[in-house]
Structures are given as C-alpha cells and as structure tokens.
Image 1: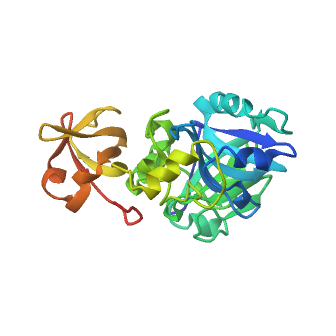
Image 2: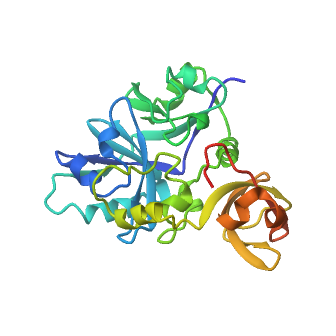
Length: 297
C-alpha cells in the first residue's frame, strides 16, 4: 500500500514571532522550546497555573519563527490566552492562514519524506515543514505546507489521499490523543494523558505555567488513572459516558471509531488485566483495554 495523506481541516497554525519568541514560549509550555530547530519539532501543552490541561500542540520552526499546529476551533482561545502573557515582550502572534496541516501515514511514509524513524525529526520542504510525529514514530509524519501547493507536494512524493477517518482509526489504535476530544479542558493533567512517555514534557527545563503540579505528580507517584486505547464490543458510547466494573465507576469514555477508542481508566483496573478489567461496561458496550508497548502502567 502506498503512503497516504489527509489534510486535517480541524487543525490550524498559530504563528509566534519576534525577538523574544523563544523566551516567551519557554516560560509557558511543558516542553523545551530550545529543541525546536529546522531539524526537529516537539509536542507540548499549555496549562493552567494549577497544572490542568488547556491546549496541546505541535511546534515547528516556520518562516523565521514558530508554527503551533493546534485545534482550529480553539485557535483563537489559545492566541488570546498567550497574548495575556506578552507584557513588554517582543512577540508577534498571528494566524497562519497560508498553511495547511496534513497527517502522513502508512507503509513507506517516512521513507518518502527522507525522514528517519525518530520522533520529531524534521526537514524543510517546499515552503513548509515535514516532520515525524514527535509522540511516536509509528504514527508517521505531519506536514505544515502552503495551502496552494500542499496537495501537489504530497502527491509528487508518492502519497495518495485518504479519508480523515482512516487516520483517526490509526491514531486510536496507537493510543494517541486528539486534543480536547480526549483531554478535558481545565481538568486533565499531563501524566494521566501520557505526556511523559510520548515526549510532551521536559523534566530538565526551568519553570513554566503549571510546572509545580506536573512535577509533584511525577515524583510523588500521584497518577491514579490513565488514558488508554480500548476495543469496544457493542455500540460506541458517547464521549464522557461512565465506565463500570460491576457497580463501581472506574473511568470514562473518550473518542472512538469503528470499535476502537480511548478511555480514561483507573490504574487499579488495569493491574494484571484480569478480573474486573475483563468485565468493563460502558453503555451497551464491553470495553477491553489494549495496553500498547510504549505505555507504562
């Protein structure tokens, strides 16, 4: 099968430029902005002061500044929140309307882009950037390309168009979240959403918004639940539907498609993957956790 691409209409680009752009972002995001170069991209989050999830995004070097690949429906909210921290900093925030975001996946995707199987590895391409998914190389790559030429560029590299649901199914099977579809704004915390294993938080950088709670959660072992991929036997439950082991509430459903999904589950249910874990119910469906190799429970 040839490598495939999907233009992600639900994603947009927030641009961050200006002389103070690196220092500005460094004090706000969970990852180290110094890692972002022409050869590398990162995944990061912006949190409340109490360490709760607000936004997550991929960051690439773009047009002499940074491009944040984020949820298009919440792009203005992210921009407004970041702008509150500008004060006298020399920072310019904008919307990259000239750029499209694409997911690139399937057999041969990384080879077609001449990228190694290294999370975050990046290279410039035709006025934009292509890069390996910083979370997991098995997810393929992403691209930020000029809208006018994105399809031409990708098809010239041997990619064929796929459906958005094809990519959605793949990322669910791998256990990868999709922004606020899977993480609850002002409620979720990073380590419950796998930011540690998936390279979304840097433990060596200095302070950032929400850093204290994030560090405390890690070093005191306070994680009680995790976002995990599941198989569904039965009709897909709506996001937010409680998951039960017998009469006990043990979690909550997140996004799903075609019998696969993500669920927030208590760790005690996952221990041993037997007993209660084999009898999880959500609405009219049975929920079977499928712990991926990259996940530590």
